[in-house]
Image (cartoon, rainbow, N blue to C red):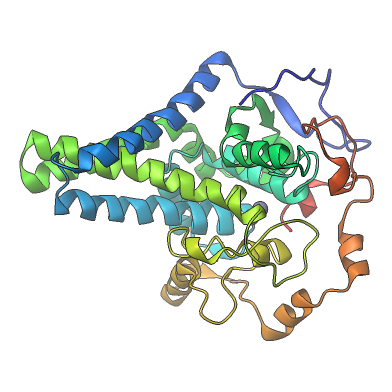
Length: 355
Ligand SMILES: [Zn+2]
Ligand SMILES: [Zn+2]
C-alpha cells in the first residue's frame, strides 16, 4: 500500500538539536527488494495448500521447517525484539552476534532497520508517527479494515525510512551488529539455501533439496511473516487488556505458541523492557523460557524479570500516571483519522524509545 498524500518538505525535528524522525526514502531498488521479500514467500504459501496433496511434503521437510521456523522466529523475538530493541537482558558478544544472525534469517529486514522501526512504534504507539498502527484511519468499519491491512503489511511498502541515527544509535555504534546488518542479503540467501542443502543431504536427492527449499525455506518464512505481522495488526485490535496502557495493545492467546510469547502484547506495552511477556498464570512464553536458559548458561545476565509487585502496579496504574506517560503534544487517538505524516513536533527523544 502506498500513499499519494503530499510528503513533508523536511522530516520533523523534536526541538533544538534533536534528530529527525525519518531518514529520506527508499530507492526504487530497495523498494523492489521489499516487494520481492514479501511476495515470494506469500506466493509459496498460497501454492502450498494445493501442492501439499500429491506433491512432496516429507517428514524431513516438516522437521526442517519447524527447526528453521523457531530458529529465525526466536532470533526475532529474543534477539531483535527483547534484547536489541528493548534491552530486556544483556548478552555475551557471541550470543549477541548469534541472535542478530538468527533474526536476520526471518526475511523481516535488516536488524538496524527492524529495531529502529519498532522503537518508533513504541514511541508513538497508535498515534501519528507510529509506522504500523491499525488505528490511524479512524474507527468506522471501512477505516478499521483499512487500518488492519496497513498494520499487517501495507506499512512495509511505505518508502519513508525510520532514522536509525535517532532510534538505534547504540546498534550503529556496535561494529559486530553493523556487520551483520550489512550482510543482510547474504543471511537471507542462507535462510533459503541452508534448508535446501540439509534437505538434499538428508534425503541424498535433488528432489529433497527442492522440497526443503519450498517448505522449510519459503513457506516457513511466509508463515512467520504473518505471525509477526499479526502482532502489529491483531494484537492492537482484538484480545483483552489486563494491564493499563495508553494505547490499544492486547493480549491474544491463540497466537501464544506460534508467536513464541509475543502475542501477550498488552503486557509488553505496559512494561516494554520486561523479559517475560506472558506473565500471568498459564501464559506460555517460549522466548522467556529461552532467555532463562541463556541466563543459566551464563550467556545472558541482568535479565529484567517481572516481580509480582511491579505487575500489580501495572495492572492498577492510575489514570493520571498514564496521562503523564503520554506526550501532551500528540493528538488524541480519535483525532488521528488520517495518514501519519512525520511533520509534527514532539518532546520525546531516543532515550525513551525503549520504554
Ligand atoms: Zn505494539
Ligand atoms: Zn516491543
